[in-house]
Image 1 (cartoon, rainbow, N blue to C red):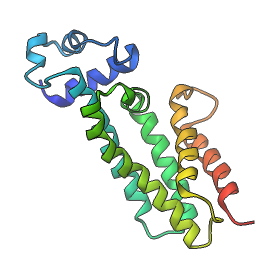
Image 2 (cartoon, rainbow, N blue to C red; image 1 turned 180 degrees about the vertical axis):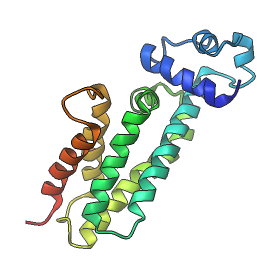
Image 3 (cartoon, one colour; image 1 turned 30 degrees about the vertical axis):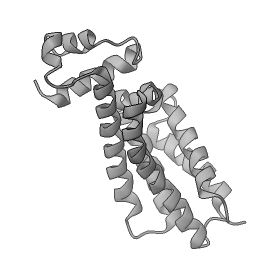
Length: 187
């Protein structure tokens, strides 16, 4: 048994039951381990939650960074970053739900360890918006406020998106990006 399989099972259980209702026994049972054996891999449920949050943010940072470091117009970067982000949330729905809905369950010591990684992810988006403002493609706007709005809209998608729904995640991404760009582009 490896940590990756444990984390995958934990994400599914925590998404389904919520962090507080999920137990170490639930996670151990899901991967056919004795509860005591699970403690050889993770010292606590808090440690599992932090590992899931780190895993999710590392994935998102890697994917979004790969887009925004490309040499292309900033508005195209934004469209692609939105597509990559929403695609990642859909592809890793259990992990995304834990990241977006359960981070408040971290005890203070674990929360403190989580914040720098979260801030790094948000900084990617702020820098992208700032690049657009500085290049004159986006009108003068507060990047922090814009990013809060953008991430708020995209993050909420995990609560209603269905792969068999009316729109694909790509179509949703395009609609969100168009709405944002209509508001950001100079008139």
